[in-house]
Image 1: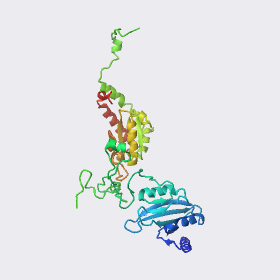
Image 2: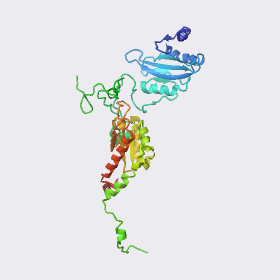
Image 3: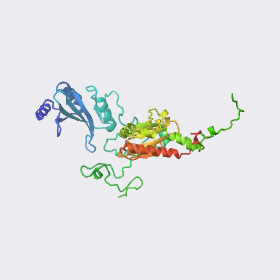
Image 4: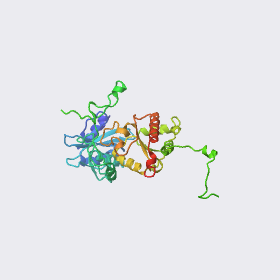
Length: 204
Length: 169
């Protein structure tokens, strides 16, 4: 039934492409047709709820950024995933979906904060997780997990404490837990714990 | 009527009520047993902090149950949870608003060192922005560990040379 629905959709709208998915129907949609397609899904096909909006950084592939929309039908209880590649260029841009779903507001702010995707037409596109004035977009693949050295959010606190935002000591990390085994073995730890903040990581 | 020229002779009844001590000991004794904590609850440690305040663990047995949510009325900040860089400004500002003498307890792994959050967003230990008196290990620490930490703080207050800076801050 899902295949039928997906095939029908791709036949009716020739700009769509099927997208591989392990669960719900998924399509790729070019960004210039995105809003009209989403509006059609909402008004004609009954996908009345924007369940999630996020982004993917493809790093070395082009186009680099993809925005993903998860739409939910609250009557039939089905989902559809719509992905759209941002056109090349910095910053990557995408038209805002806030006109269709008011709930897109914060999702788009998060995607902007974490990936630097600019949603054109958004009513107030500011950071939502990191502080205003933070210069990086942390979920981009070229941003290290430990972070980069920048100033603290408040200048007076930075002056009083002489502190900065410093890269976190990874000390063999990132820490991760392993499934199964005894708790003492499986709890979060780094792969290589032979070095620490005081003992430098051996080079080479 | 007595005036400034009146000479009092100590009678035995009054002398019996006089205790000789050092000023430090008296001041510290007072401070030690009326610690008013400021609960800086930022993450799951705050749940254990609340448990410590409840009847089962009962922080008031040790004379520090008067949690005040205003920094101006408290003298011990319990930093319970993960301090993000975004929140660090708030933590520092609230610490600055507390009147001296004041103490800080870093409760749990995150407040002490950043804990498991080796991340771009998390301050790696609240001691980078405010002076910490007692660190409590655990993720999160059990309420007993918090009580032990606060009793350790009481002992530390008891050792302070408080009279030297009584009037200077």
